[in-house]
Image (cartoon, rainbow, N blue to C red; front, side, top):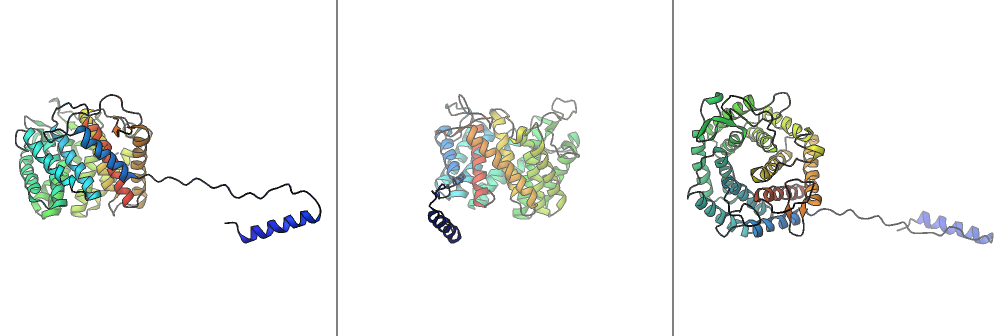
Amino acid sequence: MLSLRFVAGALLGLASLTACHEPVDDAITPPIPQPTAVVANWAARADSAQATLNQSFWASDQYYLQNNAGKPDFNYWWQAHGLDILLDGYQRTKVLDYLTRMQQLQQGAKKKNGNTYLNNFYDDMVWHALANLRAFQITQEQSYKATALQLWANIKTGWNTNQGGGIAWKKDQLDYKNTPANAPVAILAARLYQLDRNPDDLAWAQKIYDWQKKTLVDPSTGAVWDGINRQGDGKIDRDWRFSYNQGVYLGAGLELYRATQQSSYLDDANRTAAFVLNDSQLSPGGIMRDEGGGDGGLFKGILVRYLAQLATEPAVSAAARAQYVAFLKFNGESLYNKATRRPQYLFNTSWTTQPSGTVDGSTQMSGVMMFETLADLQARKLL
């Protein structure tokens, strides 16, 4: 609406010109309306991504397939992230179909794994333990907690004194220790302690975390290395710089901070998060790099999940929170605008280019995790 001062002034000017019998040169035009910014609906995008995972990657045997072309290969640890994604959807929507699919997945994954949840790989087992523990906390269904505790008891057998301690990567290579088999176990033990207040769980979490930090973390930058003694030579894989490793280590620091309220753990998490945001190898141009399909397809999603948890921790400074949220939003927008094949809602391993050919279930899961994360941040009014 035009202001009264503007209208009065315009009329006075027009009257003056008319009295002098001079032509009116300037017409009064209304202001040009400005376009309204479109707010992304991340919940709707997450719904579409979840639907694609359900329709294009779900097997009749009740597990997630290798790819959207129906390749039936069973990837044990991918199923744990599938469970986490179903939990994301249920937490956001409270749609009961997610609970049904969770139960189906648990049955299917167990059957495909030889009718057991136990596995040769300690790191793979811990992902199932983490997802089952979360499922228990959300649903209060005791069978999920029982599975988590069964896995936890077996995971602890992976600790030995080779390389000064740590959980082994797998049962038939006990002298190779890596971040994927230690940082997630520290998260699990710290969460179990917060749930049941068993001092033994906290002791495990701290023991594993201390070994991880001392052995596989650069003290000057917070960069997290992959492993030690992979080839039996006692060497550390310093050149293996994966988003996965950064995510689980900062997640471990966050959970130990929550369990103990010791600020040093939160400081560690923030240091590694800052490294991720500023490292040109991990995040060239501010976008998490392409780490390939297969297992690598899940790496970005894992970092996204734990960085978002850090971003929503009340003890994190407002400045750091803003940086983490901006990084996640920037990556999510790039994924949606540049790397999502629509209307199918299929994702690429690179979050800057369109996918071509088939898409691995792992790659699709990372994209769903990104969209669910932004839907959660939007619901919290952090976007």
